Image 1 (cartoon, rainbow, N blue to C red):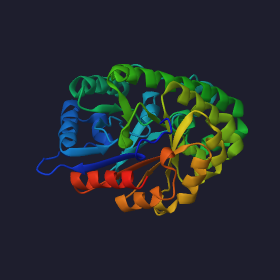
Image 2: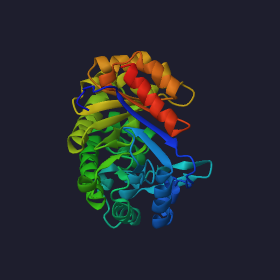
Image 3: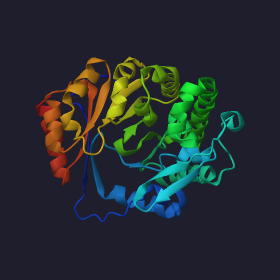
Image 4: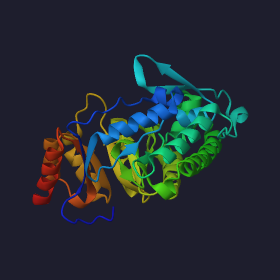
Length: 333
């Protein structure tokens, strides 16, 4: 994180441990409605069957979906059997003047369940696994979830003052959610990380809605919210989703609170190995990049990227292969 190199860049690599029996993971829907203790137990069994090499760490992902925060504010979660591991919210805002102030509903059953989930996980996994932050689809993603993306786009033009007011509320909700989850999960005491990347002391910030707006709207509403969120968490990683969001590259590079950018190309748009020039531009702008791929792909990327501003994520077939990969990075740094 300090941009220094000891003998190689940051590498998170996992592998199955031979002879260990793993367990089925959990998806968003099960984490929203399933048996909490069973879910935690299976996560522990899976971690015990996994080799964590380099900077990879065992971590438990508790999120119940991209629109969970919208649900905590009163939206209804919607599910589809065709897309079992994601969800959507049913927008409920018809008139901002009647819907505001937007607030976290302390008595919402899904919110109370989530805090209980964190308390149970913190107790059972202490010293064994880190806890992950939620899907933090807050700021303008939260407004899009409760209003609907198309109507929100129109609001930016027709009633920007109402959007200003809604964004003030959304920014307050972020702090409430973050602090309540950190307390329930004892994260300051036990440590925490962001989900799939197993990055200790980090949170993944994002605004997928940014792919639908231009730089002026991004600078007015999204960027100040991201900077505020980054000031609340530590070592903010930005989940940069889809080619439509690339129009904001210059603004993201100029944002001091965002430590690392993690670009998601989108289905059918190649892998990280196809975006060397973008990652080089990000590094030249002072940010680190999080990149993933096969061992051979990240080796190729390593030859093109600055090691002190790169974080590589991959998996191998065996623990021996993982250690051999780490040794390769030492020899070639």
